[in-house]
Amino acid sequence: MAKHILFGFAMTVAHDAAYTVLENICLRLTSKMTKLPLGKIVNECIGKLKNLVIDQAETIELPLSPFTIFVYLFMIDWRMAMISLITLLFALLPFLVALKSLNKNYGPYYGGQ
Image 1: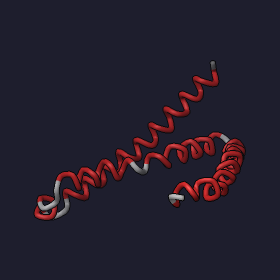
Image 2: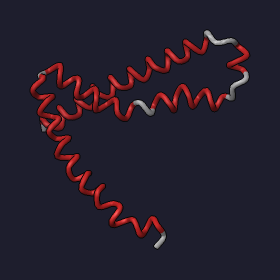
Image 3: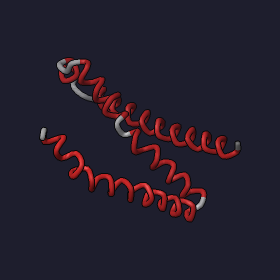
Image 4: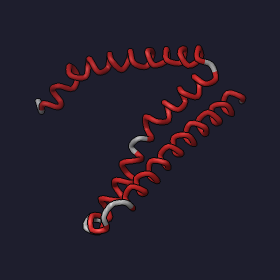
């Protein structure tokens, strides 16, 4: 039970930190837009501006959350953060094996043979 509570707390902290960073990015982008000449903004379509401020900024969130978890772990105990990197090795090993066999197994499928 405690494991699930602590996991939920860690995810909340990580996502809160990630979205705070995203908020700051969006605010800085819009602040810079206010300094642009009005003709530059008016000539851009609204979809392009929305894509820049919202969609492009959100693409940063995916790698940001695991990074903030690692930084938080590092602040708590650097040894715990370093040990957590071992799990990446265990995840990377099967991924590399699967990636190596990808061309062999799916080559005929992708080649249309």
